[in-house]
Length: 88
Image 1 (cartoon, rainbow, N blue to C red):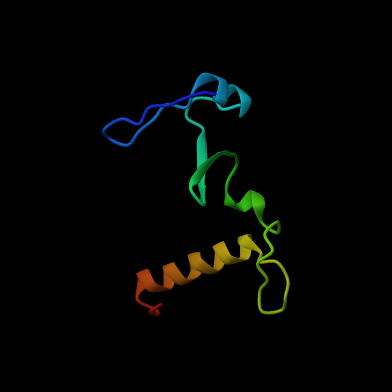
Image 2 (cartoon, rainbow, N blue to C red):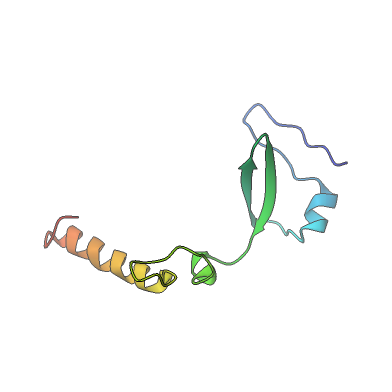
């Protein structure tokens, strides 16, 4: 069983055999999910838009949320806020 030591700064190195098993390369990101009293490390590949439609979070009409539409709406609102047209 691979072991990693936590540094005084709260950092750790993922052991080579774990990196190999998860196919992790330098500079790639991982997500750490805490479930109960344990942490699960999962590779984080792609970006949030890659999972659009895969989440079961329904909109008002019961359809999966379209992340592309959400992102565009946020851009519009931020632009309006920054130009002073509208407050969020």
